[in-house]
Length: 251
Image (cartoon, rainbow, N blue to C red; front, side):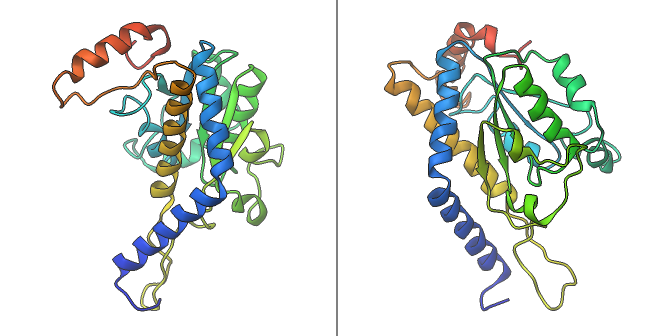
């Protein structure tokens, strides 16, 4: 590790990754935002899914001040967060064949909708099967993943493929395999993961792109405002009433 405190070095690593994603994924971010805007404009619904810590970036765009009201969380019981006991159950469920198909079969997803699937490795059965099954339903799929895993690890899905192989658009987070940015001679394992920082930034960049794309077409983006500013609840009530048939976290 070079000069600088661990905090300084982590910030430098995260900022470097954000610069890479901004510069190298600009086209994919624009395409993903446009896809979401197209979906909204044509009456479709928006969903986001992530397992384990990847779910943090999915949750960050749902029912979010400054975000699109139409973003819904596609939740798979036991894999959304570390609140389940034991926490290792979520990791185990990600590897279960057939789980994604069962979830999609009982979800509101239908042809014409869009689904963002977030999986850092993209190698487990759950995200791969979810992408495959969603596209078979006529759903557009945006994958947010680290493409490096596809060349440095093996798939855990029976097809031998990765999430990136079954998406209409792929956003590469550039996160190195293992998701740890720092190393010290005095610490036996690498540490300081940056995937949440980068993946959340990617998602917000896509949301911003979608909102601007809708406005460019003369469509008011269905954005939520903070309930902690005057008039926020009234604003949100109007948006939710107008788009209530496409908002599932209120049902």
